[in-house]
Image 1 (tube, rainbow, N blue to C red):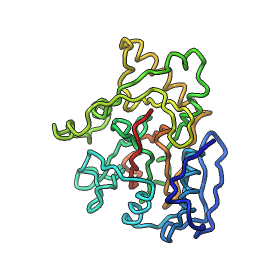
Image 2 (tube, helix red, strand yellow):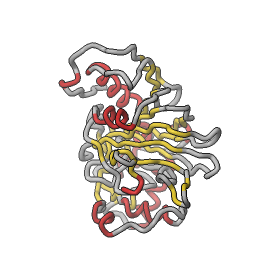
Image 3 (tube, rainbow, N blue to C red):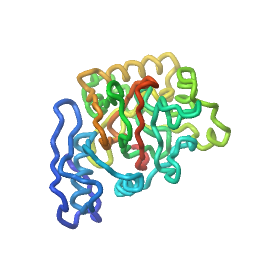
Image 4 (tube, one colour):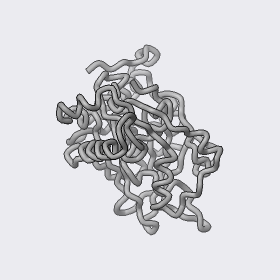
Length: 298
């Protein structure tokens, strides 16, 4: 596997005793010996990025960092994207989206149902997210897990005739499509303003995308944001998307992350889907999320 590394991060020696330990299963690795409070060398960053591309999801345990440090670390991987739901930005840090089921004064402090279906973050943007970094702030004693599906595996294990059918196909990704479906499930989603709708027009992306760093092919559709496949009748598109979704999230293709206090989880939105069921309100759960801008899928 060939992984492109920007020459600006090649130089330097590792400043920390960083180790990468693959997680048993279809994806994921823990990165140990790393303290995000301390300076990171170019070599540290290169190794993290290579681990992300190779393992799809990387976990940093016990990271006691501030929002400023969260944003600064995220920016080392690229420009950050600001979520359209500005009511859930962390005050003073618009790059951080609050993901939370906590209700204060009758209102949610964050996005309650952020993971309520399988999706790739910001796939509805012309340049979808490279990756997301989610930092645990308050966790329940039970529930609250996040599941990840490996979309490299999902593509590679498709029947040959389905691969042939999908070759060259494009699909529409729509924020409004997902938002209006989730409005029916969640009482906390207020109507979008026209300004918000105008900020997230529908986009088309390839159904099969080539990862820009590894060159591997991955499925790039989700039940969350993909409304339909271009050029197919609605019933055929719906049936094909349903098949692709069920195939992608087969339990053998999924890693379920059980959160620990102060975990930072960084996942590659170009090669994974993720899902987190809505946690009941009595089980308080709050996390902070940044998203790194990617490139136009090809």
